[in-house]
Length: 321
Image (cartoon, rainbow, N blue to C red):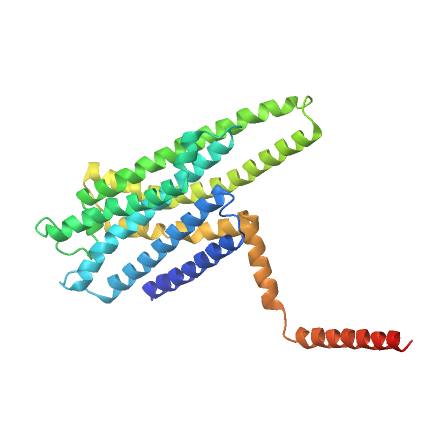
């Protein structure tokens, strides 16, 4: 069954996200490096979206779209939770761009430091969910203005919903693109003074090179995340804005673009594992520990026993002398 495959994929993706989050937490770098902290919250946001998508898949394939029941209320909640997780993911990506931009300055800018702080991260996560859930609560209260069957495929293609959901997504995507371009320009401008490093000491030159290498490495990771985010979210956002102006809706295109949203949580963990060294080391260590056979334990205990007996014998020999 098609929906069974999607459900299994969601469960697998959730497990991968949990592993990536635990591996990132075990590195001990969350308190030291803000980029890792933002990546950690992005993992949590993607994991929430996977759970919500799996729940929605079960509801859509085990109930009738056009019959009243409690599943309609659940669909109404999920239709607002999913865009909230998407908006939260975009917000975290924007903060990662701003954090990398702040790292290009010799003296960090205070405004960028505030915007990428823990308080800003929590407020951004709350804002995205309060923004959509407030509309959900209003639809529960004003049932006259509510679409009769939220589980129906045409619910999230109505103009009121698309304008409410796709406008902030398009705005955040624009902010991400602008901050990313500024970041690229800052990096290219910073490379030019590196040619005149003759006046610097050897230690300062090494520090500058390490900082440039770290920025470049994180830039590649950030570029991969932005590309995946754009491919998974922008087609849905662009089509939603197109519908608002054109008025014609193709249900098949909407379903395909909704399934494309899974690309973000599908690829992001792979990026974390292969681009973040600490997470990659955790994965390698885990694989090596799984390959270790229990046969090695008796050998170790035997070696320990032999070593202990030799120590005792040598000790006795010393005493007898």
